[in-house]
Image (tube, rainbow, N blue to C red; front, side, top):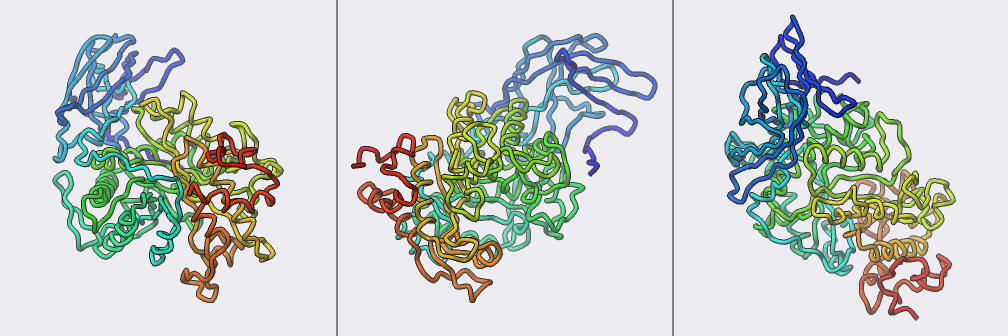
Length: 561
């Protein structure tokens, strides 16, 4: 698909910039009669809000040949949908030298708000200003957050995808983490007015009140709520879809749009509204603590925009991700924001619609290094391979699971590959800590492909996988899918992931019928006095004598006989 670059420019002036082999930026302006080259380079090294909450300090290093310019460097503000300066003259500041420090006002909460902006260094060639640095974001939006409460880590990592009408069962199970989906494309409407940066937006009251009930019920029970934000197709909200994207029967959800002024403003307003509403200040609304921007973004089936090379795709996604991140962190400083990957670490790659998870991580991190590194996290899906067989401990026999970073698939069999990679210096958060990693969707079927009951194997697989996660210091949550089977999954693929079986005579509803073996294992697995007894049965299924023989740094080693 041919993509249209959204570049703000005068009709008669074209500007471009590329990186030379020597590392300097070479920029030019074409006025129609001649080209004037500018060999100069600049790199913004920091962009942060000050303690007064209204000053942004930008530092930059500069170099290169300034011949053909006025010898000065200029600081510009750019919106997320702007890539070049075109005929703009409205620079914020100027300076000379190899090391520059500029200050500008944040103007937070006004129509001139710079919180979401990018900043860039330019040189003037006598005709135009040409960008000579990568645009750089403010990296500490949490500096203006009204909610600075610490992140409340639950006592254990145990989580579950639950049915809202089975909260009592979830409470009996001791669920600590829970996931819920938010349909981004259904939020605009009427009934609730919300003013942001001087502009009023209208939200669907019925939809929002349904979320209020769900989220307040979950967080009110002391569960840490993880919200997955999904952008479906809605003919009534075309600006939420990335420009040029065509509706596809193969796509469930679509790439968020901040590439146009209208898309940016609406997207920013929606996520700012959600962050504000679910900041925990109103118990009738509830608290969201973890935010996942999209689903399994390495496969465009869940984040569609059309065929695209990985660099362009990840850049477009990160621009949207940063709008979400900024809105969330500027409201609740210690909330966490993630992107999502499936288990195809180096598999099912076509470079157009499907990309390896490792490549997504690498490109996302590299782009963040250029645009301003920040505290993003990973929400990973660690299903067995294939999903139809709960026995993940022999997944190496598929040839897709190896114990190294080049493994096609990373799941519970080799989950250490993921956390070892994230523990490397190149991927650490700006604080120096390993980034936040949560497992937000995975499960084990209790039915084989012949329709036979294999619930003992399902329960054993959960026990083994939970111990692996519980004993891994770099994984913070494990949300199992699901509390009750979904009839559609059972009918279509014989996937019975639930702790409960479902009523198959009601295919359009999820109605629990009977508890499975996994229910008790799930309930007791994080209890010191019960965990080993609850999982004793699984040893013979897996073929072991002690859990510590197969679980590195096994948490309950001292209690083993």
